[in-house]
Length: 204
Image 1 (cartoon, helix red, strand yellow):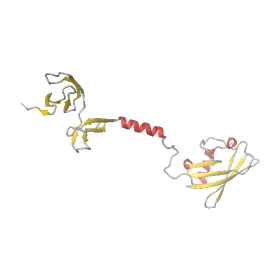
Image 2 (cartoon, one colour):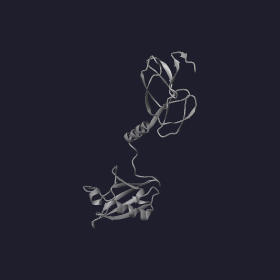
Image 3 (cartoon, one colour):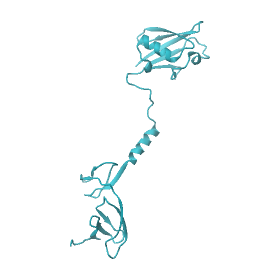
Image 4 (cartoon, one colour):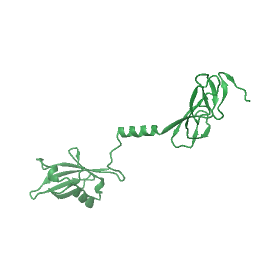
């Protein structure tokens, strides 16, 4: 990155002479009309100093000339001093003028990413596993088991325990469901009670 400093002198014929001094010590004179624009000056600098116009930053009194269409008559209006320091900063190749992403946009992207997650119970250890929506396979972080993702659907069925018959709501990707009333563990595939309380049912 290179920086140059210039002194501006207004001439009687309505032109400005900008003396730019590079860090190497070389001085270059640029004569522009008072109705000339910042963009025209950048092109003149590019032709003489080989600094691409789109990588130049002209800064005067802490303010950058962002609008290439700005006229020097307007920029230096009311300026009594004939000596004006102008900073020329040349950006490195590959850099852009795009501002860094704001904190708000970063947080919105993070929330969007978090919202695109889904949870399911591991079929091996029943641990809750979080995975991105659209994934076909998941790996449980607890037991290491790998299983295929199936689209879960909501199902309602009465408890198979004859003395209970309360309606149970579950998803099709669940292998077991526990009845909150009779505390029975039910196998969803065959819809039968496999455990009542702490006692296992005999398979018949």
